[in-house]
Image: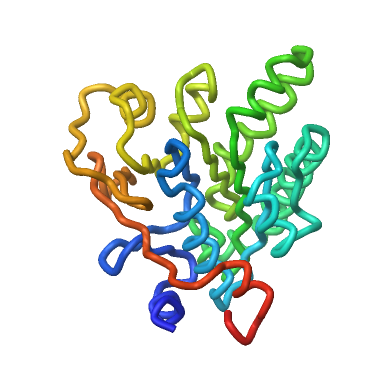
Amino acid sequence: ETFKAHSRITDNYKLFIDQLTVLPLTHHLIVGQTGSGKTYALHGLLMQMLLKPVEYQLYFCDPKASSIALLGERISPENTADNYDDIIALLEKFVAEMEKRQSEMREYLQYKIDGDYTDFELSPHILIFDEYAAFSLQLQAKEKKQRDHVNDLISQVVLKGRQSGFFLWIVMQQAGSNNIPTFLRDNLPWKTVLGNAEDQTYVTTFGTGVDIPERKMEIGEGVYTYPAIANKPKLCAFPTLNFDILDALDQGAGVL
């Protein structure tokens, strides 16, 4: 009940980390080793989306067919993929929906030329890509034409999606250039590192010359950056959920 109450006083197009930190939707990179709380943090963010009066369109890519795929099958089975070919098809579908939205927004923008999807109360579309490094390894083994096609799809989303409300969230253990293209990593404005990570993880995620607050991180705790709100890594702690997210989804609207 506490979680629901706080969710409902938060803007339809914003998500909270804690009682003092509320962030507008944007592209998001979540990094952390196993046990750091990546899935834990995602659960809280997903529950917020499901509680919004505005319907969020959620897409799930999980090449390891882990817990995120399971959640996707409960929340949005038609938009959940856990093998390479299905992931490519889902990316293509996501971009097609984005292009359709961009076409529709041309009419809206005649009334507010600098507006975005929030001004017209349109649904956000969020593609959550778990274990991106595993997919990246699969992609590297493909022909150049296929690699270029996938990189073009992803680039379109990160470069063009913000105004129309289409966002990419990437979840992974390491954000080095061998796991994620530098161009892609640098164009995900909201970056979060959970747990006590190695120095190199902070460098690849946030860049060189950043100071990381020293403390022992519990599950779901870490640091984040977000343009104009936290330009330098700032401590964060995602809320503890004392309920099971699968039970909440199974019980449906009575709980959500």
